Length: 550
Image 1 (cartoon, rainbow, N blue to C red):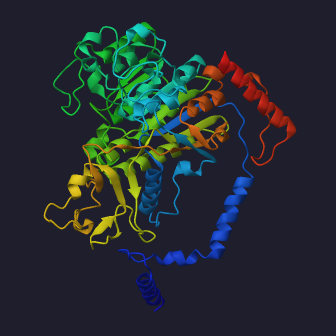
Image 2 (cartoon, rainbow, N blue to C red):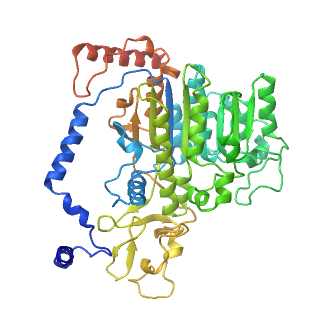
Image 3 (tube, helix red, strand yellow):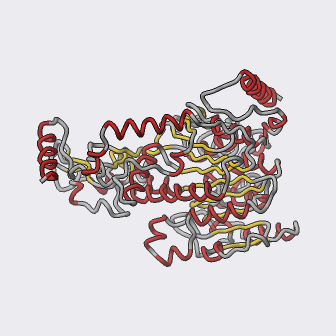
């Protein structure tokens, strides 16, 4: 009888309200969330904040997670999606990194663009210097898409991976994209165009003076010194053949086999090495008997997480971000007593958003959340700084007034025209064409009714307002979540380039290599400060400033 009363009450309440009614009824468990529930939760959260201790240790290890295109709306939707997969309503859930004690916001613009691309933003958060749209490892003095060899190395800026190598740390990166794609290339490449991944994409007249990204990874520092490299993009490392993909025309035209060149370099240096091609090889790799690992598990990008889990053959052939993260951490932990630096990119969040495939994007984000959990389990927050952030956002929206627990990929409500719409949508992208109503001349019904479409299918493309082959990036700030040594330095709104400075300062490397020579104040609750610790903190800041000047 009681559920029936609640049902009637909810119906009458929606009729009396000006809000649109939703497609599902509210879950009964929300009735337990009364004032006592929220007061208890608020006090618990407040107590954690009051007792939070600042970690002033030096970061022996740094693990940098980058969710490509993982704006705040993506994090929110992924949180709900992950919770619903566990049988919860979803909104109350937390992703692993959302439990980190410190966070801030990052301004993502490039020096020449209001909305960033992944190359210019990678330069910012990996080198501490903002660059131009489409360029990698170069400051503003280098123009986009023009090979300026006459500038020499003047515009070049070193990344945190070079700083880490100079500090004696073992280094590596993991990506679900090509290993020459924008984010990982920001670690090791200096190029005027992020698309110069192979020699055939460099202007013909400049190929002798501007080296392609793949060659920089294999031949130059810091690329050739990276201990473990795991991802996709094998196509640009082999001599031109018929095994490439028409969707990615970048193929070698110089007949070089860079995989063999990588092996030869390691042999010449008397270093043991291992080249991996599939998931089985990665899982069975002997981490003790090799100095360097190169894993290229696909011709192009690593398949989407849902494709890996839905197709056993794909899943057997290609590792996911969790597999690669765990192997990379375990490997690097064995390679230097001075610690390690590891970048982990969930790059296909961005790719799914570009095609308005919200479900694919959310599954990629949830997979990265699980990889972060692995990193937490394998390391100690006393000496390991873990960051999670994004390079930019997407024009990805969570809209309407769906009831609590409504499936995040489901119908949110009904528009003024009587047609249903989904909770998730985009401002731009190819979803425009998948949802446009070509069978009507009624100007109030330009879109198809969402309830008539297969909206929970991974191939479904959510509605977009602006038709585009690829969805455009979003320009709002992105969040950075941090735990471990000096993670409290993320505390407000920062320039994206600030990230590299925190990493360098926390690990005492790069321009902050001598910071560790200053005695650090003792750990304390974040809300309490002593005069001694204030003075020491001021001295550290003063020293850092002096170092940067000279």
